[in-house]
Image 1 (cartoon, rainbow, N blue to C red):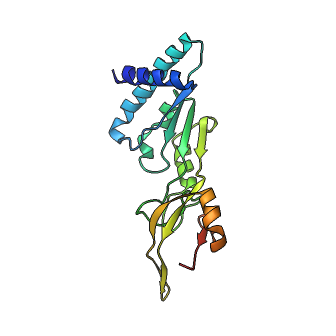
Image 2: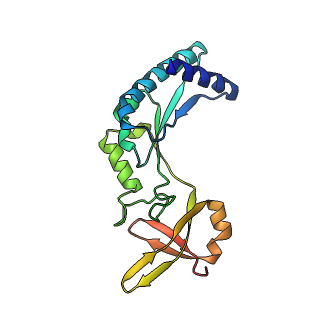
Image 3: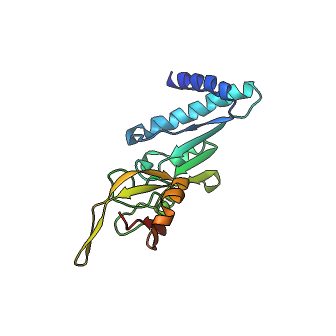
Length: 196
């Protein structure tokens, strides 16, 4: 019933926007629902393939996968049998009240094993088909407000996440006011405003 309801709802919406397909983006999928999600995707793809075939059209299905949280909950070997494309969310590694860091660090650091490299390695080990995979990268950064204080050899970070910033906002508001600091370990550039 869920497949029919969901596919009918999306088919009606799809006709009104003249799209060629749908991206399924299920966030925080629990592990115990992994097999049910596999069955849902299979039946969903079959239903929409049938509907599109009646209109002499080809249906395109993509599935968005998480970069880190709950990535084990998606059975990529099974899902890629039914999806035309798998999109890995390569962003938001450090936001909110989490440890300060890059939105999309290339490499892991001593403070965090989260990185684009570790995400890609995980999915490769799970058997993802690179020819059906896209790594989505951010075109924004994060604004962290606070101070770095040094006590002897220890640096104390009292910074907190404030908000995301688009690349154009960063260029307009911050580039001239800041110095650049390259963090080789993460292969990430930080902008530091020392005036505030």
